[in-house]
Length: 257
Image 1 (cartoon, rainbow, N blue to C red):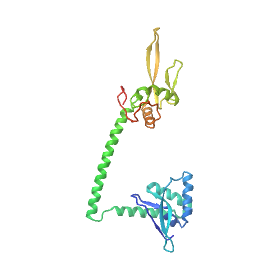
Image 2: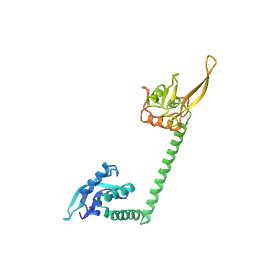
Image 3: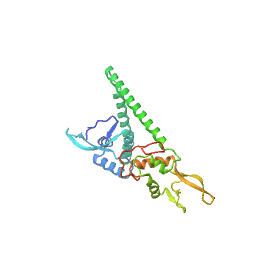
Image 4: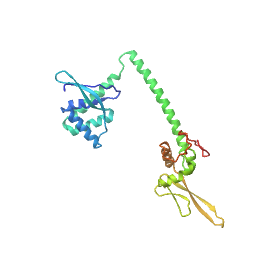
């Protein structure tokens, strides 16, 4: 294998398994086999596989499937592969990554005034897009923080979620082990969920015989509200048959979105 040719175009610095094989003096088949073994063992992430080719000793173009290592994670995984395959060539691989990264920096520097102006315009556009995304995410986070307040009952929280059958929410939480019924038939927070997703609000109720009874009402902690909302988005809460399929919410306690 005389020359490795890459047939991929990405912004990230990348290296193919073909080039790894060339650097360590191994057969590409053995490198691919080592990569698959490490992926199966969970040591490295599954790299992308793409069509590429190399120029052999006769000058012929030979097609080949190759794994592509990209970015910081890919750099780390390629070093793991070489350390397993040919540890004596690890330094050579690291040097090659440094060459690729330095070349990427040099290529990114504009060499003419028009290139510099185009780069400035592109950066300005990207910054504007990022600012817009950040603003949208900030509004969404603020909205969800208002929704994920602690101190409301699961029933009250479920009423805010469009389409959820709030009459069945306690039964659903009982199925999940969050709630249980005590000897009086009242819902109580289970030890599994207490102080994690739920807590209890104490109250006092006067009975017909004049005695005062201490009550406990399960209420959501912020983490519990966030988890219920996650279940809602995955359609894992009891839904009404008339639900319109829209995931919306109302941060007021009084009604349904």
